[in-house]
Length: 375
Image (cartoon, rainbow, N blue to C red; front, side, top):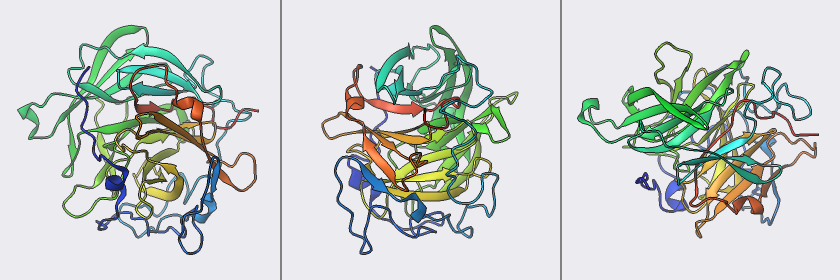
């Protein structure tokens, strides 16, 4: 087994303790209340299925660093679940386009995950000779092309920035192609570990762009002396694809999930309630954080470096790692599809029974995943 990235934070508390604001978004910027708490700030007790109030979160103050005053995705939370109807994918997706969540395992395998049937199915192994290091993130595009991001052995050619590589192949055909190699650095920030996500252009769903956010370590607010969290963007249609800095923020680590109607979500640790989660929504053009939604019912797990985010059918799914090294999968009712005004968080206990060895390093949401619930 290849060596793994060191855990960025060995306990959840280390991932989410409050520290100084460094000029970007902090929990107090535009957040009017923390869902799941009463007026005194005491966390509401819950067992099994719990609820949180998305409507309690406001758009961030546009005066905050890195936050745009306007964007194509609109201000604040985007609760419209898109153009799909009856659980269908976007209209321009082929029938054989990938339409399930996919996960990357510690054993360098990719499996699909059906969150309705709660079933994992083996897709492919990651065994490209071009990958000299180890995979840390991946995506699958609408044509079933897999793109893997790997951390590569250090070389002195990049001014002490760690080299990264993008390698592409199709499941069942390990005729791999290296499409990017280099140190990802701009404006004094770099990408030395990251999560990936494909996101459709809002006006052109078939045009997917690739996003990466620095270190998927479960997320925590960073303080003085640490580099800002970085969101990078790459357009695979460019003649020479390269990462460009889309924006910076106060979150050291953010796993990403994109949609076929142009939304880009992230998950990070909560400053106010250590160990819990907040959902971010990014403007894909500016990198600005449009809104934060604290969801204290979702635990980052006991090892923040093993935390992944995915989208399916209008909901967000998180994959964490428990103290017993088991996988914890939760579904967050992002779109309130039942119309009850509550945004439930439900743990999927069967989803933690993995048919493969080791845990889950990353998750991918192909942009042909259904935008709305089935039925």
